[in-house]
Image (cartoon, rainbow, N blue to C red; front, side, top):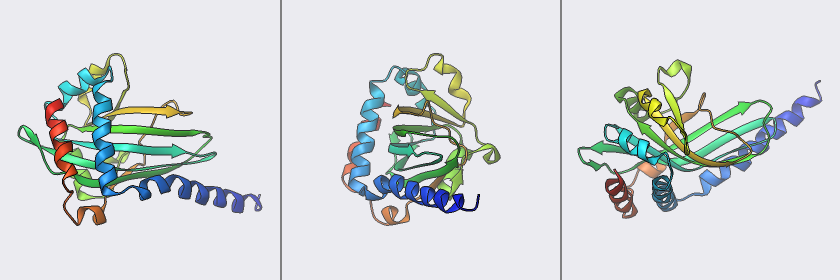
Length: 207
Protein backbone atom coordinates (compact mmCIF):
# COMPACT_ATOMS: atom_id res chain seq x y z
CA UNK A 1 0.00 0.00 0.00
CA UNK A 2 2.89 2.38 0.69
CA UNK A 3 3.59 2.87 -3.01
CA UNK A 4 0.04 4.15 -3.47
CA UNK A 5 0.34 7.18 -1.20
CA UNK A 6 2.73 9.20 -3.42
CA UNK A 7 0.35 8.71 -6.35
CA UNK A 8 -2.64 9.83 -4.31
CA UNK A 9 -0.75 12.85 -3.00
CA UNK A 10 0.28 13.79 -6.54
CA UNK A 11 -3.31 13.43 -7.75
CA UNK A 12 -4.53 15.68 -4.97
CA UNK A 13 -1.90 18.32 -5.73
CA UNK A 14 -2.68 18.21 -9.44
CA UNK A 15 -6.40 18.54 -8.80
CA UNK A 16 -5.82 21.55 -6.56
CA UNK A 17 -3.70 23.26 -9.19
CA UNK A 18 -6.13 22.57 -12.01
CA UNK A 19 -9.24 23.69 -10.23
CA UNK A 20 -7.76 26.62 -8.36
CA UNK A 21 -6.39 28.27 -11.49
CA UNK A 22 -9.70 29.58 -12.97
CA UNK A 23 -10.57 31.41 -9.75
CA UNK A 24 -7.05 32.80 -9.29
CA UNK A 25 -6.89 34.01 -12.89
CA UNK A 26 -10.02 36.15 -12.63
CA UNK A 27 -9.59 39.89 -12.14
CA UNK A 28 -11.90 42.03 -10.03
CA UNK A 29 -13.43 43.42 -13.20
CA UNK A 30 -14.06 39.93 -14.58
CA UNK A 31 -15.73 38.74 -11.38
CA UNK A 32 -18.12 41.72 -11.47
CA UNK A 33 -18.87 41.27 -15.18
CA UNK A 34 -19.50 37.55 -14.73
CA UNK A 35 -21.67 38.15 -11.66
CA UNK A 36 -23.81 40.50 -13.73
CA UNK A 37 -24.16 37.79 -16.40
CA UNK A 38 -25.19 35.27 -13.72
CA UNK A 39 -28.03 37.56 -12.63
CA UNK A 40 -29.21 37.72 -16.24
CA UNK A 41 -29.09 33.91 -16.48
CA UNK A 42 -31.12 33.61 -13.29
CA UNK A 43 -33.82 35.79 -14.80
CA UNK A 44 -34.49 33.25 -17.54
CA UNK A 45 -34.65 30.26 -15.20
CA UNK A 46 -38.07 28.73 -14.38
CA UNK A 47 -37.14 28.78 -10.69
CA UNK A 48 -36.62 32.54 -10.79
CA UNK A 49 -40.20 33.40 -9.81
CA UNK A 50 -39.67 31.68 -6.47
CA UNK A 51 -36.22 33.18 -6.01
CA UNK A 52 -37.60 36.64 -6.69
CA UNK A 53 -40.20 36.34 -3.93
CA UNK A 54 -37.57 35.04 -1.49
CA UNK A 55 -35.35 38.03 -2.13
CA UNK A 56 -37.98 40.46 -0.92
CA UNK A 57 -36.92 39.61 2.65
CA UNK A 58 -33.34 38.49 2.02
CA UNK A 59 -30.55 40.05 4.06
CA UNK A 60 -27.99 39.69 1.27
CA UNK A 61 -26.97 37.78 -1.84
CA UNK A 62 -23.67 36.08 -2.59
CA UNK A 63 -23.04 35.52 -6.30
CA UNK A 64 -20.43 33.03 -7.50
CA UNK A 65 -20.41 33.25 -11.30
CA UNK A 66 -18.00 30.39 -11.90
CA UNK A 67 -17.59 27.48 -9.49
CA UNK A 68 -15.29 24.78 -10.82
CA UNK A 69 -15.59 21.29 -9.38
CA UNK A 70 -14.02 18.11 -10.63
CA UNK A 71 -11.46 15.37 -10.31
CA UNK A 72 -11.04 11.63 -10.20
CA UNK A 73 -11.06 10.08 -6.69
CA UNK A 74 -10.05 13.46 -5.24
CA UNK A 75 -12.44 16.31 -5.87
CA UNK A 76 -11.96 20.03 -5.48
CA UNK A 77 -14.11 23.06 -5.98
CA UNK A 78 -13.47 26.75 -5.93
CA UNK A 79 -14.59 30.10 -7.19
CA UNK A 80 -14.72 33.81 -6.52
CA UNK A 81 -17.87 35.74 -5.77
CA UNK A 82 -19.36 39.00 -4.57
CA UNK A 83 -21.57 39.68 -1.56
CA UNK A 84 -24.14 42.47 -1.62
CA UNK A 85 -26.21 43.45 1.40
CA UNK A 86 -29.74 44.70 1.10
CA UNK A 87 -29.90 48.33 2.22
CA UNK A 88 -33.55 49.32 2.19
CA UNK A 89 -34.68 49.16 -1.44
CA UNK A 90 -31.15 49.14 -2.83
CA UNK A 91 -28.00 47.03 -2.60
CA UNK A 92 -24.65 47.80 -1.00
CA UNK A 93 -21.30 48.00 -2.72
CA UNK A 94 -20.10 44.46 -3.45
CA UNK A 95 -17.49 42.79 -1.28
CA UNK A 96 -15.39 39.95 -2.65
CA UNK A 97 -15.39 36.49 -1.07
CA UNK A 98 -13.74 33.27 -2.21
CA UNK A 99 -15.36 29.85 -1.93
CA UNK A 100 -13.47 26.59 -1.77
CA UNK A 101 -13.54 23.04 -0.48
CA UNK A 102 -11.96 19.66 -1.03
CA UNK A 103 -13.49 16.23 -0.80
CA UNK A 104 -12.44 12.60 -1.04
CA UNK A 105 -14.59 10.00 -2.69
CA UNK A 106 -15.40 8.13 -5.86
CA UNK A 107 -15.89 11.10 -8.14
CA UNK A 108 -15.22 11.55 -11.82
CA UNK A 109 -15.87 14.33 -14.29
CA UNK A 110 -15.99 18.09 -14.22
CA UNK A 111 -18.71 20.54 -13.31
CA UNK A 112 -18.85 24.25 -13.76
CA UNK A 113 -21.74 26.04 -12.11
CA UNK A 114 -23.11 29.48 -11.40
CA UNK A 115 -24.40 30.05 -7.88
CA UNK A 116 -26.58 32.64 -6.20
CA UNK A 117 -26.81 32.36 -2.40
CA UNK A 118 -29.98 33.99 -1.07
CA UNK A 119 -29.04 34.81 2.52
CA UNK A 120 -32.16 34.97 4.66
CA UNK A 121 -30.91 35.06 8.25
CA UNK A 122 -28.70 37.52 10.10
CA UNK A 123 -26.77 34.61 11.61
CA UNK A 124 -25.77 33.38 8.15
CA UNK A 125 -24.78 36.87 7.00
CA UNK A 126 -22.77 37.51 10.18
CA UNK A 127 -21.00 34.17 9.77
CA UNK A 128 -19.89 34.98 6.24
CA UNK A 129 -18.82 38.53 7.03
CA UNK A 130 -16.73 37.44 10.02
CA UNK A 131 -14.58 35.38 7.65
CA UNK A 132 -13.63 31.73 7.07
CA UNK A 133 -17.25 30.65 7.38
CA UNK A 134 -17.62 26.88 7.01
CA UNK A 135 -20.89 25.42 5.79
CA UNK A 136 -21.97 22.14 7.31
CA UNK A 137 -23.73 20.49 10.21
CA UNK A 138 -21.62 22.24 12.83
CA UNK A 139 -22.38 25.72 11.53
CA UNK A 140 -25.97 25.76 12.77
CA UNK A 141 -27.01 27.17 9.39
CA UNK A 142 -29.54 25.50 7.10
CA UNK A 143 -28.53 25.48 3.43
CA UNK A 144 -31.17 24.48 0.87
CA UNK A 145 -30.56 23.87 -2.82
CA UNK A 146 -33.03 25.47 -5.20
CA UNK A 147 -32.21 23.46 -8.33
CA UNK A 148 -32.59 25.06 -11.70
CA UNK A 149 -36.25 24.61 -12.64
CA UNK A 150 -36.97 22.56 -9.52
CA UNK A 151 -40.61 21.79 -8.80
CA UNK A 152 -41.99 22.62 -5.40
CA UNK A 153 -39.25 25.16 -4.79
CA UNK A 154 -41.50 27.17 -2.50
CA UNK A 155 -40.79 24.61 0.23
CA UNK A 156 -37.23 25.96 0.38
CA UNK A 157 -38.20 29.24 2.03
CA UNK A 158 -37.19 28.09 5.51
CA UNK A 159 -33.45 27.89 4.84
CA UNK A 160 -30.96 30.34 6.34
CA UNK A 161 -29.37 30.20 2.90
CA UNK A 162 -31.12 29.13 -0.29
CA UNK A 163 -28.80 28.38 -3.22
CA UNK A 164 -29.78 28.69 -6.86
CA UNK A 165 -27.46 26.76 -9.18
CA UNK A 166 -27.16 26.41 -12.91
CA UNK A 167 -24.56 23.78 -13.72
CA UNK A 168 -23.48 21.23 -16.24
CA UNK A 169 -21.20 18.21 -16.24
CA UNK A 170 -20.91 14.79 -14.65
CA UNK A 171 -22.13 15.73 -11.19
CA UNK A 172 -25.85 15.41 -10.48
CA UNK A 173 -25.68 18.29 -8.00
CA UNK A 174 -23.60 20.22 -5.55
CA UNK A 175 -23.22 19.72 -1.82
CA UNK A 176 -21.79 22.35 0.47
CA UNK A 177 -20.65 20.42 3.55
CA UNK A 178 -17.13 21.56 4.38
CA UNK A 179 -17.27 24.52 1.99
CA UNK A 180 -15.45 27.59 3.32
CA UNK A 181 -16.33 31.18 2.35
CA UNK A 182 -13.51 33.64 3.05
CA UNK A 183 -13.02 37.35 2.30
CA UNK A 184 -10.64 38.24 -0.51
CA UNK A 185 -8.48 40.77 1.32
CA UNK A 186 -6.61 41.88 -1.79
CA UNK A 187 -9.75 42.64 -3.78
CA UNK A 188 -11.48 44.29 -0.81
CA UNK A 189 -8.51 46.57 -0.10
CA UNK A 190 -9.64 48.96 -2.87
CA UNK A 191 -13.08 50.14 -4.11
CA UNK A 192 -14.96 47.74 -6.35
CA UNK A 193 -14.93 50.19 -9.25
CA UNK A 194 -17.42 51.53 -11.76
CA UNK A 195 -18.63 48.09 -12.81
CA UNK A 196 -20.10 47.57 -9.36
CA UNK A 197 -22.69 50.22 -10.14
CA UNK A 198 -23.94 48.19 -13.08
CA UNK A 199 -24.28 45.09 -10.90
CA UNK A 200 -26.16 46.99 -8.19
CA UNK A 201 -28.46 48.53 -10.77
CA UNK A 202 -29.14 45.13 -12.36
CA UNK A 203 -30.03 43.65 -8.97
CA UNK A 204 -32.25 46.64 -8.24
CA UNK A 205 -34.08 46.23 -11.54
CA UNK A 206 -34.67 42.53 -10.97
CA UNK A 207 -35.44 42.58 -7.23
